[in-house]
Amino acid sequence: MVSKYAPRYAYALATISSFVALTLIIGSFLKFEVADSARLVVPAVCCGLLGLAFGRFWPRRSWLWGFWVSSAFLLYFGVVFFSFTINRQFVWLPALQMLVVAGAGCMGALAGGWLFASKRHEPLA
Image: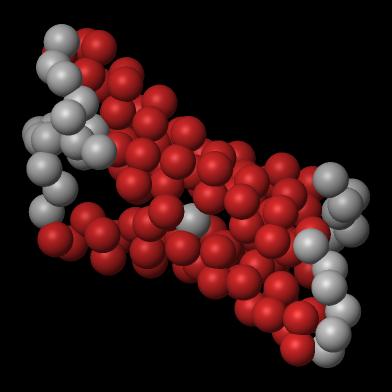
């Protein structure tokens, strides 16, 4: 059953799915040679689809699910950016990747919430 309010376990499920997706994506990147553009597109699409699924099942303030499903990627890119900053190498690419992945997750979750609300004719607020 689809409900507007998310149960408490849904947040843990979103975070766990984020860490599982990160592990699978990094593992596949290590096994196969991947183009540089795919290193940003694959996590963004993954977080967008996860956000779409969570926003579909719990549409109330659905865009916030984007942050939950991209939490592992945000942590990963944040650590990479912080490590570059500590070494006094100001590389902004990891920060940009954090924004793109989180944005894709939020947009996917918002789209999932809109799909649900348009089918049931309910407001999202």
